[in-house]
Image (cartoon, rainbow, N blue to C red; front, side, top):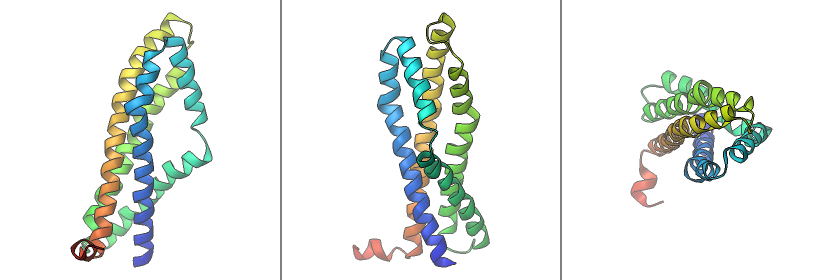
Length: 170
């Protein structure tokens, strides 16, 4: 069971890092670029992105990391006396709340509203202005949460070695 927890924590760290990178790219460049083009072009591009991102590779990383996090919550609570348990629980909750829950409660409803918007209509342009601001703000939350989750999972992996790898320079 020990090796399984280590393997799942490693995969959760990788998945959280992948998601942090994806969200970081949107927060630092994609949304700003879409905000610089006329609203019909920005709306159309984001509508296309929102359809294209729903694919097996994205789902594997996004929901696979969530499944790993759920497993690690149980493992952390069942083995609470172990040094890594607090970091595993923190990483898991950061991912599940800061990524999955924020996505479902905030980003997906905004995406759904944008999906029904007419890029050429004034109402679409008004929605787009609000979308750029709100969606991006929540995306920043996801970015930070995923990065913090990845860090927590790495701390758990280091705690499992008792810090020996760090102390010995390995």
